[in-house]
Length: 124
Image (cartoon, rainbow, N blue to C red; front, side):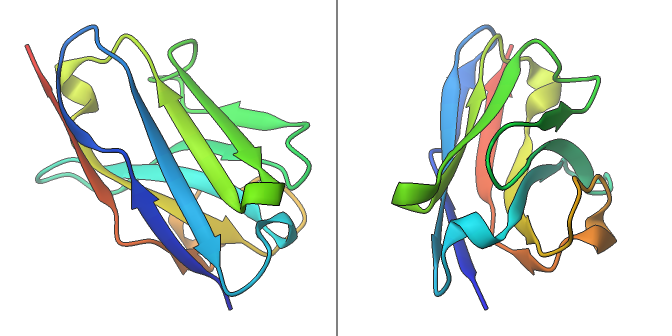
């Protein structure tokens, strides 16, 4: 079983950048496909980005494509989400998640392990 801890959230202004990190412990990060999801107040949790075990393939939600970049460093047991050109609608709690299956997942139920989340607030 893997434990996931997110960090890097905060309060920024529209147009700023943030980099979120997700540190895995308990098992090596390389065993998992990793994803980032987010949940805004009053809304359902939604997919943001996912990355294959080797980092060779990624997928993004349309709402963040071209602005966010998911990456991973398996040696450091860490997955990242670089967020540029942030908008107020990006305000949410951001969660990292781990998937034990063989392909990228885009749905909440496809992920087996979750972190506690980190708050990102973007002011206009």
